[in-house]
Amino acid sequence: MIITLCGSVSHPELLVCADRALTLASHAVLAPLPMGRDATPEEMAELTDTHHRMSDLVAVVRKPDGSIGHAVSSEIAYAESVGIKVEYWEGQ
Image (cartoon, rainbow, N blue to C red; front, side):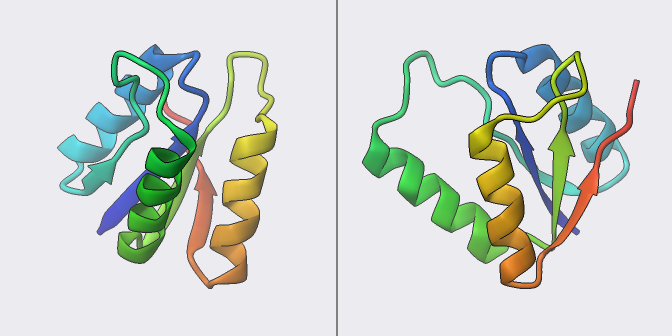
């Protein structure tokens, strides 16, 4: 299964943990890890489009306080609107 992680890049340790667990569970994982600089709007649009076209599932990684931001909420809404399953990752 191809899984796109969706979460705040301000908490990369959470994304890395989810990426590792899902990869070890034999999934191909697309993750929004920091790239050394902020992505341009054009780069973000391309990455988002690629992730949407390829994903079987969007796994949402919440912030440490349990919240999700506006961008993640938008990703969830889009995934649901095109029929991509959304789950909330509850890993350790």
